Length: 172
Image (cartoon, rainbow, N blue to C red; front, side, top):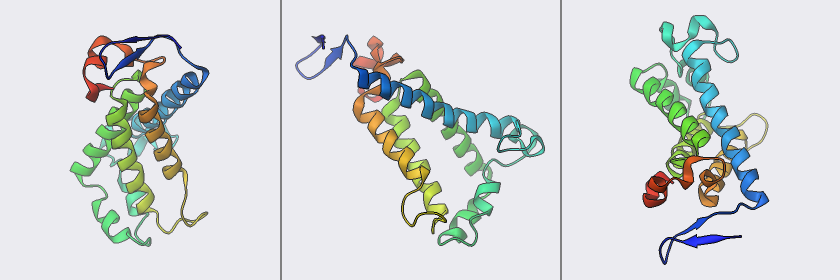
């Protein structure tokens, strides 16, 4: 692997290993999951959100999921958040920001942190889990997000090698 030192601590990778492409595909794919959830909830494209419940026509992107948690272990807390405008805005901003950051490969560490928090909260809202007492897709996605951040996945097929990103660790 060819590298060029930019400082005693930081190196810029100029050649990619096969595993870097796997992480890039995982990053872009997971980014698309977040971005798609945002778009479907915004426009109601009838995949998970019917048109009549789209956010742009006054629907709440959090009500369906959170109201359905009422019988769960932490349901009282989470169902109380359902439909609150600040929760809707925070959720939608999170979906959009995480999705775009992962797809573009910039801000992947921030996206991984925010995405992990969002996914763990969604996991907690569903406790106890129906099919497995501990692990579900929210936890698996969280693990992948952490792996993306640790692997520097934004540098392959992303904007992570831009000079401004290399100079500013928080953009990586």
